[in-house]
Structures are given as C-alpha cells and as structure tokens.
Amino acid sequence: MRNNNLEDALVAIRRIMRVTEINSLSLAKKTKLTPTQMIVLQVIANTDEATPSFISNKTTLGYATITTVLNKLVTRGLITRKKGDLDRRMQFVKITEKGQETIELAPDMLQSQFEKNFQNLHDWEQSMIVACLQRVSFFLEAETIDAAPI
Image (cartoon, rainbow, N blue to C red):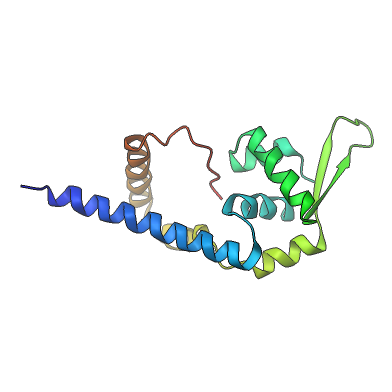
C-alpha cells in the first residue's frame, strides 16, 4: 500500500518545481535573464554603489557565482564597473539605464508573491513553514547549493 502523505508531498514538490520553471521561462522570455541574474541586478539597483562582496553577502551567493553573473550583466550593458578612487583593488558596480528598464520589464518574481502571502501568516506558522522547507531541502541534499533569499 502506498503512503498517501508521501504522494501528496511529492505532488507538492513537483508543483513548486513547475511554477518555478514557468516563472524562470517567463523571466527569460521578457528579459533574457535568469532568476539569479535578476536578483543580482535588483540588489545593484537598490544600492548606490555595490561591491561584489556586498552583493555576495546580500544574496548569500558565492563570490565566484557573483563574479560570473556580474561579467554577464556588464557584457549585456545592464551594469557598469568602476575601480575605487582611493583603493584601485575595490570594484563598484552600478546599474545602467538599460538595466533599470530591464527590471521594469520583468514579470513579478515568485519571491514577491511568496513574500506577500508569507508575511500575512502568524510567526508560529512562518516558523513551521521554514522548518518544513529546511527539512525538505535536507531530504533532497540541497542545503549546500547557492541560493539567494531575495
């Protein structure tokens, strides 16, 4: 006999994966960016002059991942890089007008939708959901994967 709870859990995980995939495809179609690239672009847009380490800390993405994403955003003309005036080793990134336009074109990210609903929950409900999601992440051996919380 199959476990109905197991089946329900697997269906819920598949639904989450599918809506994530659909959202990513919609974002790519409208902006030609991945969700990670869009998140990094949004962090830069909300900061006067961001450094790669600031972006890495804000998104909890690894420094190597941030470097790769920044290179792609510079190539596309969505951000600019500037060396520090006092310390030439410092690097500052800033959004361009084209980058700002790209953000405005983007569909509402899943994070925004989730955030609205999540914030309407009681603290104990939020804690339960976080604990469950962390447990699922552990089951799937995904706890070491770089992922931005934004």
